[in-house]
Amino acid sequence: MTTLKLAIKDFELNVSIRGQGSPLLLINGLGGLIRTFDPLREELADYRTTTLDVLGVGKSQMPRWPMRLPGHANLIAEMLKQLGINQVDVFGVSWGGALAQEFALRYPRMVRRLILAATSSGPAMLVKPADILDFCQKQQRKTAQA
Image (cartoon, rainbow, N blue to C red; front, top):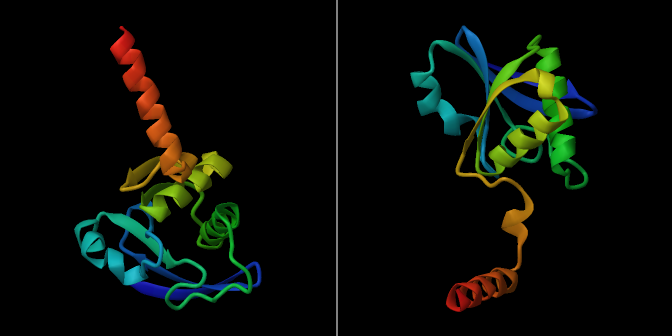
């Protein structure tokens, strides 16, 4: 396993690369460290896995201001370019799944396959509970009238 500090757009990212074979990018959930994926990476010896501490986590630099998903996706694209990876399978867990989707949306030619685990498809998770309750009540009324 190789751990690198990459300078990308005025930030320092902590990146880990392990194995040989088809490139697979692993993106953690919020606050997840590189080592979180160690057990999975042991099982993926036939892949060249790359993972990182996103900005503000682990050994990566803390940004001055909070960064939104598009900014993180741009950093990942630049990271992959610096590593000489043109196309990659992307596995995202939880918040990392949201970032994986953003990356695939912004850089579709760089993503061969997208694998999502324990994540959402976007802002549906930001709906207010009262709106969900209202929707359910309307559906119940429709069912009762039928």
